[in-house]
Length: 276
Ligand code: C2E
Ligand code: MG
Ligand code: MG
Ligand code: MG
Image (tube, rainbow, N blue to C red; front, top):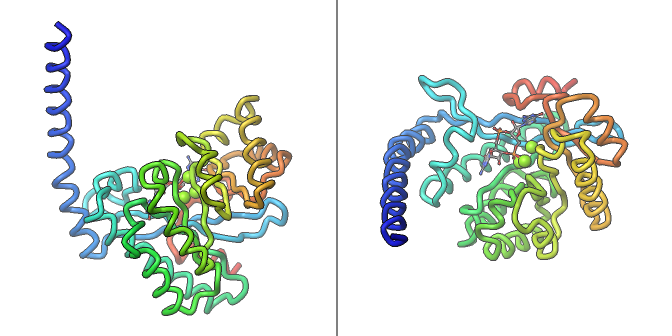
């Protein structure tokens, strides 16, 4: 009967959730220890102006220098950090580290210091925590207005748009630049733009990877037109080939980021590049 099938499906679903939790629990404990023991790292990936070729910004990307498994990307561990207990302290560490690095580059390079972008999870919004931390960091490090920005993915916006929106408005008062990340892959891409005017759109790299197929070209050129008419900067992510670069430039994309130019790298490597 239908009821029997549903009940079997429910049991299977529970078993799967239990297996996932059992797998996640040890990793979550290990990740908490990793934070305390200083095993987290930030790598930085440059963003370039397509008009001038200048390096204008860097994006901070989280890594875990795992004692036995090597350098792990976020896909290997960030999921287990979801939920406020872990993502809040990790997110705080990311912001503090990025702000500190940004201040160093400002001291070394003055006006030529790149803007720093940091990815944040929706769990970090609300409760006045994120806004308070930004205030503190901007003041403590005497960061130039606009030099530390945040990226939020559409997936994260979908989860808690109300809290996010109210914090984004407060962050705007602090002149913190905002970007909507992985644009075009969410469930309500256009609705987010209606509710909050971000400073920047980052075109999801799946569209760039899909070039030169006509559908991807059409989507990218629509996003560029939309962003431009709303006064937003448009960044293409995941640019890997000169051909993709040429197409994006021809479509009028403002900025680009990808392995073609530079992979994410530790601060030292970036410092050398920035000193040029
Ligand atoms: P994202 O913010 O969209 O970052 C871009 C991702 O694309 C990075 O992966 C980057 O290494 C990768 N990438 C850059 N250029 C290329 C390219 O040319 N080709 C390809 N195939 N990939 C490229 P990564 O570092 O593994 O990060 C994955 C995601 O994890 C990020 O996507 C972001 O959503 C999240 N993330 C990273 N750091 C943090 C963090 O500190 N906090 C939070 N909450 N999320 C983070
Ligand atoms: Mg990002
Ligand atoms: Mg992205
Ligand atoms: Mg990126």
